[in-house]
Length: 275
Ligand code: DGL
Image 1 (cartoon, helix red, strand yellow):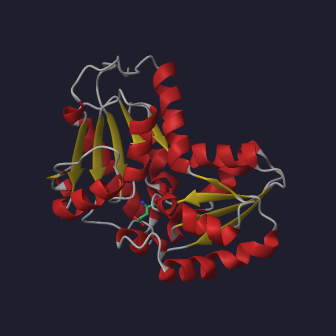
Image 2 (cartoon, rainbow, N blue to C red):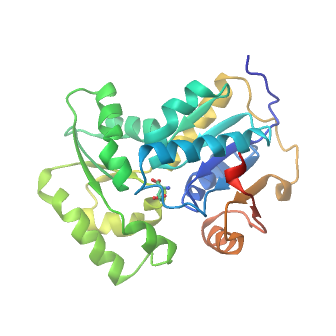
């Protein structure tokens, strides 16, 4: 039986830096929670890898996070949520949530036309997981998917507001234009950082769903329901968040400090293949 202390940290993992968009929503929405974050910077990207590979990587990371005595795990990566979440939930005796269900639910709750667009990595879109989950909430919804792989390197290059990024966004998103979607799921960790570019391209009448935001919200509910929400202000802020990576900690720290609401001083490198 799963037992834990409410003051234990939340494990959050991603293929690299992208999942920090989820970590920062958790920090904003549930600031009392400690976080142990793992970014698989040695093996990123997951978006172009096979399901079996992503499942193997995800299992290793969960095993690593369990050594940090986490009380729950958030699969912050859309691709890992698409390919591995189901298996992780059945294999490990700890609450685990991904980013797909919260994002899909928010889209269904918002759409009026029942026409929903989804953008993500090749893996996420190929898996059709968003369509599957959206149909669990509403069988009639029409879901249109589009992989946008170049968004990831553009974000990591810091080109959040740039003519090149505008051009790439136009090319990718144009096909949604005459298809009457009123809701678009930003189904990849990096895409919320391109929110203003995506909004400019799609027009203000299309509602953008940020699965990172929705996931932090779901996590809050999960912790409450399991009676494992952290008690108030137990630890100094500087000790609340621990970051681990599988490669290049300096680069990770620089990116983290460009988007996080707290200062990230270090990231510890671990050999994830050992887990
Ligand atoms: N984190 C991945 C996702 O949300 C994007 C980067 C990658 O391809 O690994 O799907």
